[in-house]
Length: 195
Image (tube, one colour):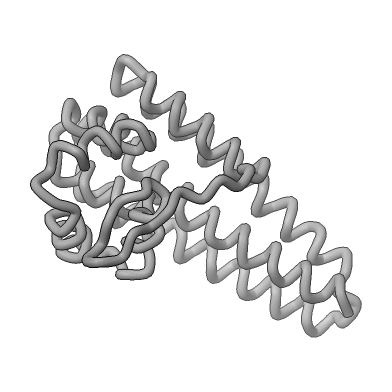
């Protein structure tokens, strides 16, 4: 969901502001910016206005230990998974980029990594499926999903056609939907592996 926020705001903001928003992704920058706001209610209203579900707003507020109404959310100290560490490193690399070209390149690297993750999960799922009919249905679903991904990327990229951010936005959408698909396939794999 956070990536959706990034994609939305990058669409609204200029390239320079987009780079600043990527900095905003880091927890310490979020904390600094929230401290400057009159209240956390302003942030909540803004996130709801751009379509962020309230559960995600709660999670965001919880992760930075801020208030929402009368509730105080504590900072959770849990170790990051390997996948979350990759995500953090990739966002840090994108944030550190000095040019739009460099940002595009790093977002492309992220998209390729997530695609490998999805393909690995798909391959492992094929290995555990013993029913040929289920395998065929999985193949059909994957083919349709790939069509969806391509069309979704074309749609979001078209909004920036001819601009320097087009490939960045397209790769961001590609990463976002591919990550969701990888997680879905990994969950299916876990379910079939436990049978």
